[in-house]
Length: 324
Image (cartoon, rainbow, N blue to C red; front, top):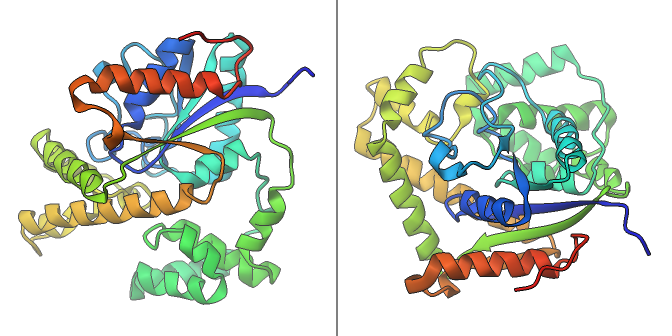
């Protein structure tokens, strides 16, 4: 029976797990292009804070949806899916393999599973009330409101993502139905993709955390302070300013805390984020997990490449057989 679905590879996992490198390896081996699934890398600037792949790391592989929006632009998961679908269609039409790479679980799931989005109209008065509440009482206090209304949505949305928290509360209050319930209903559509989802992880949590801590140190060495200082000079960047690595440095620039404490806060928040990412992706039963600490360090690159090739080939998403 002919499978008319679009072949798609997705590389997911926690921050600092090597997703960028994996995406490039797969793209070079199977003739593909990368579509980013990172909610912060889509914004211009913040290259260091969001660990955007460098030209050297891309190795000539075309990457989409990186550095395309100004930091003051509102951008929803529905916007992401619409853009990504169009890009994937173009990549496929040119005979190449689309490879979605990123750790924003909501983006990946919504795209791969063809989720439709809530059409509840916005209420300007309610939204202003909620944003004012967050401004006066803090993002966590607003998030606690969502926790009372819709615990499942609260578990999936970071408290600092005020826009999404506001939207989830708004949907609950206007429609009388939890956003999480509406999202479950939206999953009834058939996906147009024949997907191979690869998850990168470590069996040792300490190994992952060590990579995260080291990456933050490298970010600081590479100019994170200068980049963040320039970022805060811009106006109306509230959404992008929630990126980890940006917001934690504000107390330092405001003279309210030491650089050492703020850098440690970045590491702490990044570790927490990695934990949430893993929780999110483990809910899927179709992820092919690769544990990086199982790979021989003496021959890591060759073994990692071979495992990635085999995983994609065995998924049968491609129209030809790949022989190792």
